[in-house]
Length: 81
Image 1: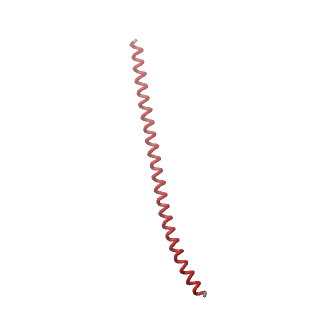
Image 2: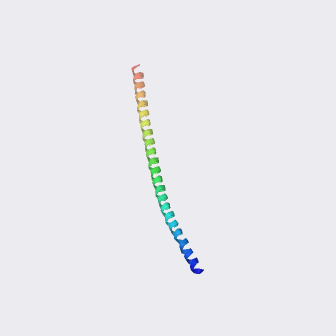
Image 3: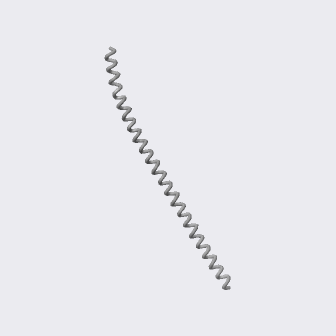
């Protein structure tokens, strides 16, 4: 009876170890996927922030040049009159 129980215990422990191995491999794959997703999200956020900053700088420079040119033209108009 005890020998049979030991045999059953070893038979049950083998699938458990296989299950643990598969779970650990799946977990490592999931961890790799999560790390890759986090890295991609961080890169996308950084790129979006850089693009927004560039657009803001361009808009400020363009609006500044337009306002300075319009003020220059108004100054020229007032001086000519």
